[in-house]
Image 1 (cartoon, rainbow, N blue to C red):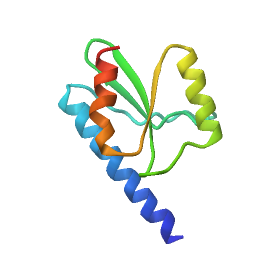
Image 2: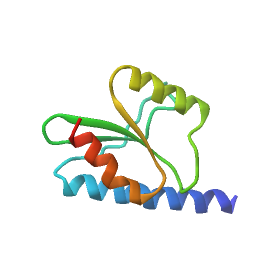
Image 3: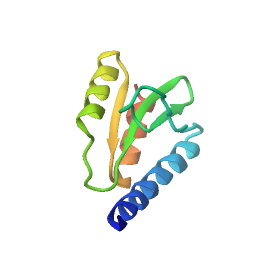
Image 4: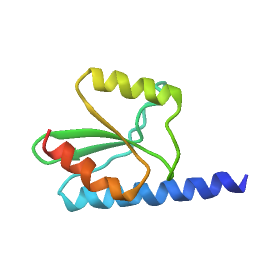
Length: 101
């Protein structure tokens, strides 16, 4: 219902701020669409010098689903950085971590 719409809008606002911040650092932040592979993070953060991270974008206060957490563990086991972003204040720290990886 309408609550879902509000949550979606809040998530979109956080996501747009992430995309803008990545662009400011000279990178791109494509949506990661993974057919047949539910639960993968929403966005790839691709920064200069071959730096990559994955970001699950949530509305403020929302938590990842169990399947999403399992995918995050799988990616981390492979050596990738995976972040859950639900507050625009976290964006700088996330991008710093990707850049310094």
